[in-house]
Image 1 (cartoon, rainbow, N blue to C red):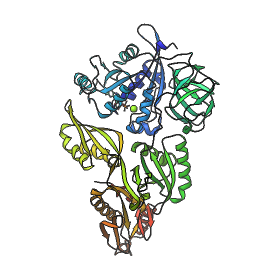
Image 2: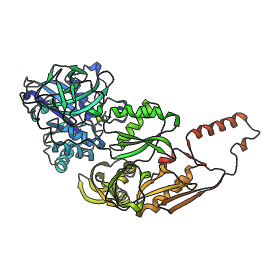
Image 3: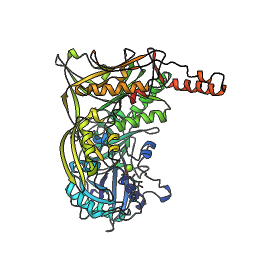
Image 4: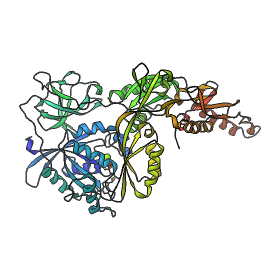
Length: 597
Ligand code: GDP
Ligand code: MG
């Protein structure tokens, strides 16, 4: 296709503002998919995404559109992941296209992820077409939202297209705007091949499928290509586009977006953001700014049933093949036995992987509390990364500890502002900015990631009745007075409950923790001290008193089946317990004890 008749774009939006529905409607109205083949949300492939209504992997579709001027165009839509965990992947896929549709729910207005995503689009020098969606809703207020877009984002929204992705109103206008206002890609057919690796995923039949955007040159079937990051060479066996089903074609030229397969076995060998060129007569310079995405949140995954360790290993290895940003290593815990310490891009990423292990592989998991990566500076000048609080070196060797900080942006109706400020303050936040946009407050906080990673988002939702929106980016590592707090049950340390805390908060956190454990651990035949300690110093303590009665005693002589039921129930309950020394700790304790409310 001639460059002048190609338009490459993405859709940016806050979650639930209608990105997927609009994409579906664009695909459907251009006859790319016959109506009867149309499933809701064509682009959200995985079950888990469908259920949660989130799009995790970038996806793409090629749409043929004949415009009102009679000219045939090729429109390539890249669906970017909408969640903050995948910010790096979003920023790369943005660089594969020239424009964005900015979708804002006209009954809601601009939200935190609207801002985060549109700033990424602006960073990538996109031409931006604002789209006001959901105009069919009675609460739609297009004029107010257009004004908000102008005030907050600073782009002209006077010509914003008014759309209902639900009813189809404004879809034709949207297609015309894409052709008219978004720029055509540039590139040179004669230049050496330069292609961006936008995304990749594993397919059981074809091996790894690589989504590419051709910047310069031409990619053909049977070409030998080189991944510039690691120098690996592959022979291309298929080239094609998504309509949205895979359709093979002979070549991809400049400005085009499509896929290749080359008998690549692991997604790990295909890093998002890498540059692909020909093995011979390749381009000299890769595309700028490649950085592999780094896991920032770690937690332990243990099989609830120790005999399932091998199954868990296989599940984790399989998932890792398909996800280069998920890392794992074996871990042994005195409390939980054999398992894995796993690294994730963020909490959503963690949840998705955990759910897939439980659901697709049928393994019951114990997940330990998520922890961020700390930088431990030793007295001898060395720096080590701490992925697991249990591994914290002895304090006498440690010079200081640094933790990751984030810049958090929260949009919230005025009524709830006080609660939000208090929550941020409680989490060691430093207020950076507070402004008002269209009846809502926008606060920017500098926060420790550590305080956010566990339950901040849930708390924020609950104190604002769901009205706050939240987004964050990592900023820097900063020194603070951080210490390891250990928990001792019956005088023995339970490694899986160790955590890093700020020294000033240690007593308070320790108290909450031992109180919770006291409720969570069932009584035994003896009394059990539960303590929180820093170094050798106990900062909080509770005692669980001994059990007196046999629970089945009251059934004595009574209904036998009831007694049996009770015993069975006890047995079932047991499976969910972990023996620790002489004490049994229920698995839920490992997460519940660390919650802060
Ligand atoms: P995404 O998270 O941005 O991909 O949002 P979705 O496309 O999944 O839409 C979120 C919800 O809004 C779904 O329940 C849609 O059916 C609904 N929705 C999307 N567009 C419209 C619209 O134009 N009007 C109405 N009333 N609902 C819409
Ligand atoms: Mg969606």
